[in-house]
Image (cartoon, rainbow, N blue to C red; front, side, top):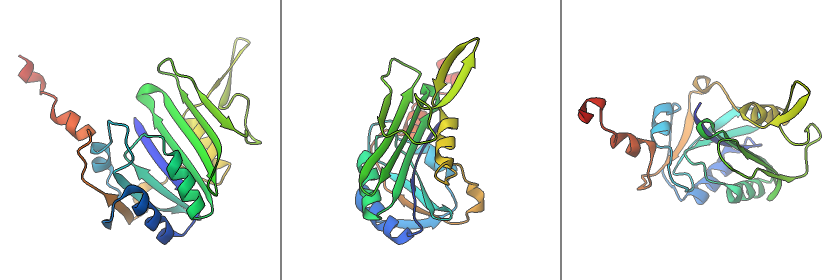
Amino acid sequence: MGRWAAIFINTNDIHSTTEKLKQLSGIDTLYTGAFPTADLYDNLLLEDSQPTYLIYAQTQPDWIMIRHNALKNLEGWGKELSEHINTRVIICSALRTADFYHFSLYERGEIFRVIEYCYGEDYEPINLGHPFDFEEDPPGKKIEYRGDVDYIFDFDSIEEYSKHFGLEVQPDYESISEWMILKTHTRLRTIRNFRSKLKPWWKFW
């Protein structure tokens, strides 16, 4: 997993979820199918934009998972989805090449917790909201080495935090035969565009 982004809604109301996703994304055409792993990767956005590709399904009781193709801060989506469905929403993303990890939780239209760390560059971490009862301070997993103590917030931390809310962020994708898909054509730069401009190695000679 190099790049991963998802929204989780604590509901089984797929109809209300669909209507709100259409409104937020501006995408009207809905179809269903198997999880499009390769196509989602090809359409990962290389620009700061709202998602143009949403794949979702009920992945466990009372939780709908939405995979998407953006790494943009979706604070507005978290607020609106949690208010519209009157429930809890968790938004997570990870970019391992940059050591970037994000976890945020929304309750009925309000931000409850935001944690964001990036270890790959000079980056000011974000640690907002009321710490959960199970949390260390600072957030993440505690690492001790030769008397030194440090805390690391990474993808394992995202998984661990989510489990405290009864959520598994990595489902068995193949066990879900039908995913709902909202996709629109975009002129924004994607992984596919980037790859198409790369020359094969023999053309450099």
